[in-house]
Length: 516
Ligand code: MLC
Ligand code: AMP
Image 1 (cartoon, rainbow, N blue to C red):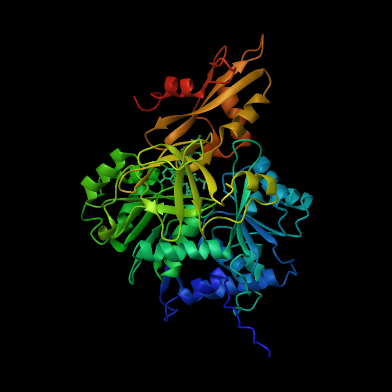
Image 2: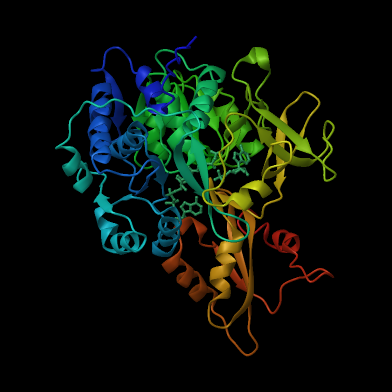
């Protein structure tokens, strides 16, 4: 007897997103802040043409497409095209400078690099050195060699057949020690998370999303774009966040997603009132802690309770406050419950589960959890427990009602305006400077960015250090959000009896620098 093998459905994320496009492909899918209107047909055709271009290059399966371009709808189409063609998308923050890009490209060895024409002069040699065969440009005014080449390709394309555990994207996330690690996310990770959020956040017909975040990290690229596309929802698209213009568009929208800084800046707009948000259904915050003051002020001004959720590059979204009041209220200073299908636990030092209110390490298991770090099997093994939970590096607690809150981090990390800054990386650069003995970077509370870096540096014997010069040197080499907002030169760093730098003391010393 023979059995006929059942045809597996295509697990390509793009196929699921495409299936959710509305029947009328000519209605508006994206409206930009500079008055461009893209239909669903435009998204379909544009991504098909770029996918055909990529597929025509004869790349190996699993080829990486590294992209460092300004935010534009075409950049989003390039992401969709990469999924569609079955390759692996590698987004890079536009603030990264050459040393940072050199590391990512050298480590990921992408077959294709797409950069802005402004940066081509320094990106191309870096890409060539890493063996990249194809470099294209893409600018935010719909020009560049990528679109020129894609214009010659067919606008029809069948999404490449993918299995759920095939790679879809690599997101670099910095490490406390050593260099950044590439978190490998599969089609299955991304789709399962998008589907869970679609139902948990009650996405419904007629929803319109304001998209004001960058599209090179989890929040703007996955949570926001997948959310809107999987619901066939229009996006009002801001290339750069502008609080006044965003508030002005709130009456045309129903859903907004932002990092806490976006909420702080909108609250500073006198035009933000109950009338402005009359059609809004949901405000979502994440990527960094939302201060309870912001949560309360937003409620008082708009009548809306912000829904705070928690995620990371390795796990996409893992917890969320409830949308539906039947499941509970949205509680400020908490990140809610584990999402359906996701297991989240808090473990004590001894590996035993913490009781209600006890503080421990947050660990997660589920279809959302990544496939490991790119070419770092050792590191991957270290970050998982024996029973398969991923160690988030966040420290938290679960209260008696099951709400999870993040109370700290076991990883030495500063989150500034929603971007991660790893002190070890910045200290490494400072320590290499002439005359520097050692340095420490600590986070200080900041009214706009939530937290910012403050550098404390000690000189070698006989050397004189100028804090302004140190900051200027860093600016020339590192992404702008990593630059310490202040730098102090001290004779020595405080140490404990083991000789370890006491960062807690420095944090205490500088905590009022920007807020008092
Ligand atoms: C800009 N600067 C920052 C900064 N952004 N400094 C610290 N932290 C930041 N985040 C610098 C600028 O270079 C400038 O320096 C000065 O601060 C003032 O800049 P600005 O004009 O006020 O900044 P702006 O361009 O408006 O950007 C601020 C911002 C942006 C908040 C809009 O940072 C942003 O879009 N953040 C969102 C990050 C995000 O999407 N995170 C999601 C990660 S995903 P100078 O010296 O030039 O004056 C993730 C997982 C999850 O974490 O759970 O979602
Ligand atoms: P990233 O590595 O950029 O994906 O950043 C993920 C980190 O952002 C998490 O490990 C948390 O430390 C932090 N984070 C995300 N969402 C929240 C939140 N709602 N509250 C506090 N921290 C958050």
